[in-house]
Image 1: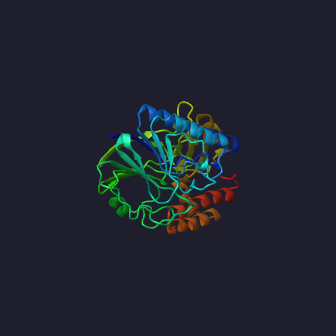
Image 2 (image 1 turned 90 degrees about the vertical axis):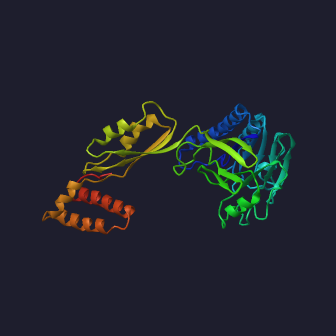
Image 3 (image 1 turned 135 degrees about the vertical axis):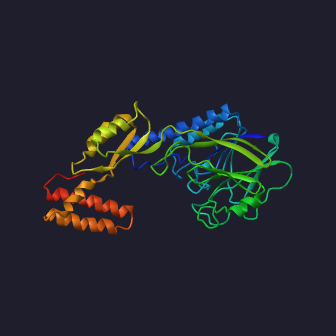
Length: 364
């Protein structure tokens, strides 16, 4: 039985373009701290193997201090480390992986074809391969089959579990035919699995820390054991900050009061997008003031207005006035809207229209 940690998609030195420059620089520094948390976890768990399935770097341009931090952190790990470069950090003679400063316990796969590395003390063979260009359309495991030699066979690759993909297709039929005991995959930033295809257990650990609001909640790595024909893995959070989306219903309430009740009691290190929902009248929302109220509780926060026009305002559609005429037309458009996005656009137009008709300020 082998004790193992599986991680992927660190995307070190990501630009964090949505953040102010000083926050983006801080986030890149925190990514380096993440590497040492990985090393500490590996040693606490007494991991024999640490498998890193690609996209450790966000691109070919890497800050010197980032490369030094990665080399130092991996060198602290007492087990063996295997890296399979992905589409963002593909192997080339000019890639960050081509340097000579890597610790002796680190093996970096450099070719597209599967390479087998014996680990005799574990009665194990680790198979892996690398992206050698930003795209790879050939099936990564096509024709591959691990020998039935009584050893534990583990694969470390970057790609998508699809028959057709520009990012290393690894369809389930190839996983099933591989004969691997465990297949450690990277590329998908959400936790997927562990799944089983034939005798092979496979999984994506997701990214270890989110970089945007498409990567929500706790992020981390998979930790557990692998044996012949079996793998027992659990998710372990590793992130220092989370991206969160919170909805606050302001129906029948003052928006500031509703927001105040929804904020965390203490200071949070998370990045949060707050969506104001529910029904409200024509009173304008001061989003900047609401963001200022929430700002001390989060590392970064934004407040968005997704409220709807209060239902009783539609009663005015029966008025024999310009306002009534406007509301009748907008109600017709609302009824004909094809989807939620179209309905939201009509609702927003109603708020602006009523504000203009009644000489109010901008309702946003």
